[in-house]
Length: 101
Image (cartoon, rainbow, N blue to C red; front, side, top):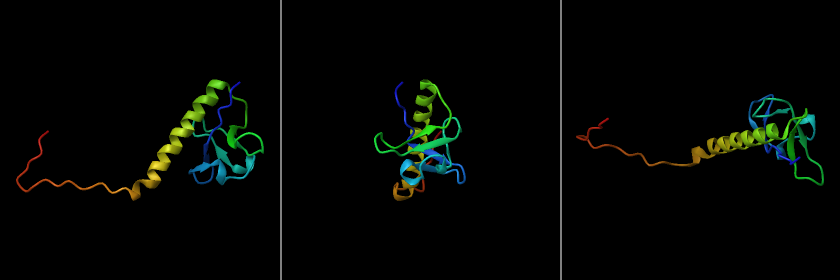
């Protein structure tokens, strides 16, 4: 079975996305899966890349879907966090310009 590690998880207390770097190992991470809302374990060993995994067994298809959902969720939160730094120029219409539907 291929490994589909989850890179981002939801903190059960705050509801915010957490990186594997920001949590304690094992169930102490207190995180849930963004895809299926099931408990996750933070796997932070010395051989395999650090990642989240489901506490209970999942099929490869379920794991792949949850990993994709977690990546999408993390990307949305990343964009939301940086949007304050992006300035979009305001476009104003002249006094006699009308907008048409």
